[in-house]
Image 1 (cartoon, one colour):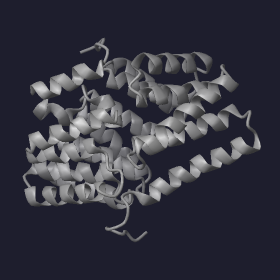
Image 2 (cartoon, helix red, strand yellow):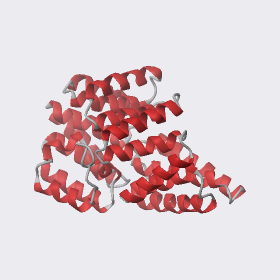
Image 3 (cartoon, rainbow, N blue to C red):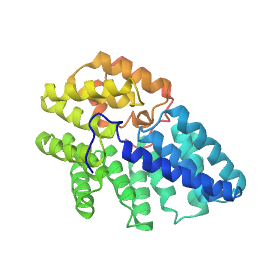
Image 4 (tube, helix red, strand yellow):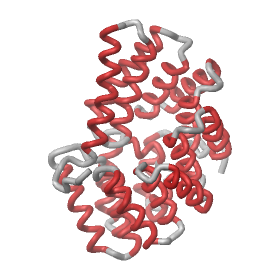
Length: 315
């Protein structure tokens, strides 16, 4: 579809996720005892937050209420337990998230979503071998899901196996050339491999396909900054900041562009904003390669300490 550069960022996908949440909500009205519908709605609201399409106050409280209700309706539902684990991640409740994902897998060892979300949790905690095992189980349980395959790319990214990630995400992009998130994560691989022309090329495709989703625009801006194309990076940062005055644009995504530009003080201002709103992106703070340029800054260390992340079992 034609893109509207002045429209709300990622509007097509925001509408799609909201429509999915609305359909689950309608099913709940039809059958208030449907635990699966509660869990599905909870995950959709959490997804709206994780992708940065809607503010935290519009999504996470709803997701929490729905997930808790799902578990109350069916304590043995792996879907309900997984949804509550996702909410735990959104709330930075590390122990709660781990407990719910473990319980979901215990209840249904073939539940692909439980393995997928558990893999992301383990990657964020620095437990990369376990994360890789879990993401493989998710992909085995549902081999047709491009979302779970992209999750595997994320696990490879946080585990810093960038060559394997490039190969994997290239294959996913070929399976569905219209799938924006394949190009998004492929761009991240190329940035880490310092192939900036290729990173910018695939990011531009991801921006178009994702309807200008903020996290993808930020990735392109970061790639421009890393490559030395400061004017292009600054233009994207200004665009994100302009949109942030009228809609939710995750502050951590803007911080990534600032890091690419070397605007470190502004990056930390935005990271503090992200900390105050318990930003989704900061779940991966300790493992995110894009934070490497500021990792030794005392301000970064203080944020890590305040998040009270568990010690990683593997390093």
